[in-house]
Length: 227
Image 1 (cartoon, rainbow, N blue to C red):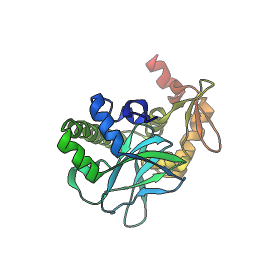
Image 2 (spheres, rainbow, N blue to C red):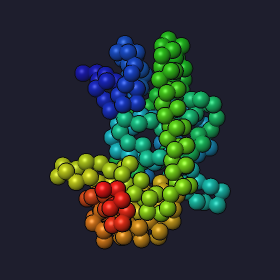
Image 3 (cartoon, helix red, strand yellow):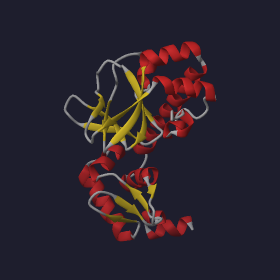
């Protein structure tokens, strides 16, 4: 049976579309699977499509001329990557790579143009998504430039925490991925995480960070001020 847009995780990216528009968009999209490490699109590549993540996580990252990587965002189910190319039709400003097994709905730019000609409301929705992305990046840059190491790492952990079946919140990121998101060296992040573990805020495993008590991100004196 044909799935509708509103029955898939992509609904969180395009959830305000009328049902008939959603049905038409779904008809022109196709679902693709990507293995861990697969590149959805590369930095500098001519734009061809946007990708709506259904399962798994995709990192949107930029590599400088000296080879340093900066993760701009980790897109999760319901989020999109490649939207900027719809605005200026210039090469992708950053790459998108699967952090794990990923499935994503693909909407080619050519199909997007045809859909917009028929359903202008789709353009308005994409503009809202772009606006949300720009707002998040500006807030992220401001926060990272005005916070110390502990505050920057805790901000990433809280933002990326996912609820597990046992009620514990899990951050399924490596120390390196957290470092990229926080704009810090991995060694610094590892020291901060070890400090958080000593405080009882987190429990560290080989593949993830378990968030136990976010109030313990703060030193005892800071917790007394908050409480």
